Length: 357
Image (cartoon, rainbow, N blue to C red):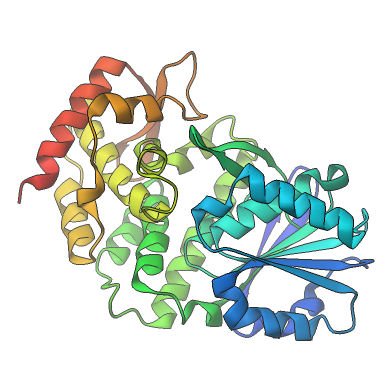
């Protein structure tokens, strides 16, 4: 069992990582609650909802099961959940539990942030990808024109990571989660980055996964404590997301996993960085690792103008100019403002570079 602590602007909370936590979640409650509401998706419900509800048997508990997939992170499902919260009679002393991956964590967290102007919630991530989204209090839903454009900063009361829930992840979910681990390593620590790139995702020992997840969470926690509201260095955590988010919106939410899109975005960021800073970064090394682990690099489809339009809807942009996180070197991120002309040129040269062996 490992435990980290984060000091948010409103309160401190713990991140607990270990095995069997879903069966003892009530041990970590820090307040008394009038009722508890578990939100999960259909895939996770089949596997772990029963364990959690059994643990909550002494409480007045409700649960909601949503369809799995990025398309659930929408205004329609947000409205449905708000209606259910009112129907259940939840009050300001209720607790919401987000049991699932990043989609459930973001959606349920946004519900918690806005229902009755805010109720307590905890994150119980069940994917590798959610090690990133569950920490730091960014909660949101998508809009057809862009990802996470409707949201808030709202810190959870705790993050409880049961490593046993990762056993059932499929290859796509593992790839998706590891892309965010690569991102965190690229902005902070070359040694961790090289460690990840020696990993074969088809033969992944649980001990190595936990080691990488703990490293990723520590990196994320350090950044979030220094810049909770993304006014400065927290923006570095968006490395790879400028193109990644645009691809998700362009292809349709759920057509490509979030982390798979981010992986392509990371390669693109290295490609742009090498040109902007006239330097050599581990582009080819990362490309080879992504190909070996079956990331869908062929998903960069569509004309450059269409993709650029999606990139310009990114919430990080200023005065309609793209703000892109680049690397001067591994562990040294920087934010650069990019012109439309440069981005179109880089997208074109990147596409050519992707198909070269």
